[in-house]
Figure 1 (spheres, rainbow, N blue to C red):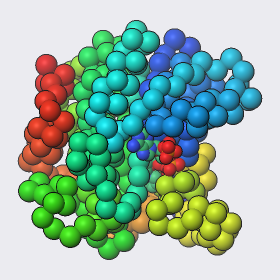
Figure 2 (cartoon, rainbow, N blue to C red; figure 1 turned 90 degrees about the vertical axis):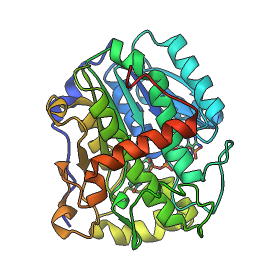
Figure 3 (tube, rainbow, N blue to C red; figure 1 turned 180 degrees about the horizontal axis):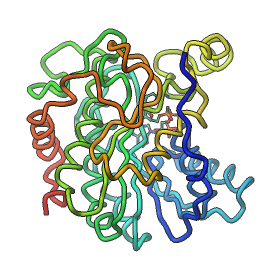
Length: 322
Ligand SMILES: NC(=O)c1ccc[n+]([C@@H]2O[C@H](COP(=O)([O-])OP(=O)(O)OC[C@H]3O[C@@H](n4cnc5c(N)ncnc54)[C@H](OP(=O)(O)O)[C@@H]3O)[C@@H](O)[C@H]2O)c1
């Protein structure tokens, strides 16, 4: 297995004082490491978390190593659009500028469930919640340009456990077809990639760059609906390291590259991928950026159809086209 791609070390020497980043799902896994690194470099970091006790614990752990880190948490449940609106209002009230938004939070292969507004859980949390949040913060990002939006997708946007990644425009919420947890994850992660493309097209000339990333196969809590996390950590991880499983610090490199590397604005809308499992073996090595092996990821009509559907489902959004 190829070694994980790592950021240019000079990116971590950059002084980020004065910059503000918003990271969703920042109490755990890749989001937590992202918040820690940005704060260590002097940035103000806003953590969007659904469990405030976990958010405060995450902040406390970062403060142990970086006592001066400027971190603040507000409650965000991406499965409830009212909570998304309330979080956006907290952020806009507290942050005169936003230099980067990391749409990181996610759930994978959950049992059938619905969000507060009745959307299928993975489509609702992973995509629709972030779609609305991005729209609500977009004017502030534009005013702070150059700024970046990073959407956490996955190599499973292509194929997840044998299920092809596609957007089911006629039934995104599994109301008329049997539910499949992996297929729904693939749909939501393709939506994350297409969201970044849709943003990039609409933000042309604004100085705001939007990209999607696959962080690699990373040892985090994401696995919890498929196997107990302790089995992953104690039994699977030691065996799977050679098959490509990486640690959270390695899995955060793609996000940090997308946020900090000066070359990224030249690739607005691109998909940045750590090593991963793809049906196209040439893509398994990953790349910064990488051409997605899924033809649906290059379907410009689908980008717009998903955008229109998402706008309709979240009840109107307009900052991107304003
Ligand atoms: N790990 C991988 O191998 C891998 C591979 C490809 C893509 N990704 C993507 O990477 C991103 C980060 O995942 P991770 O691996 O770091 O997993 P993780 O450790 O489980 O972190 C996910 C974060 O999302 C939060 N979250 C879940 N539902 C939420 C909701 N309704 N509202 C707000 N926050 C919510 C979680 O909060 P709680 O702690 O409260 O649950 C947690 O903070 C995800 O988008 C995932 O799809 C991961």
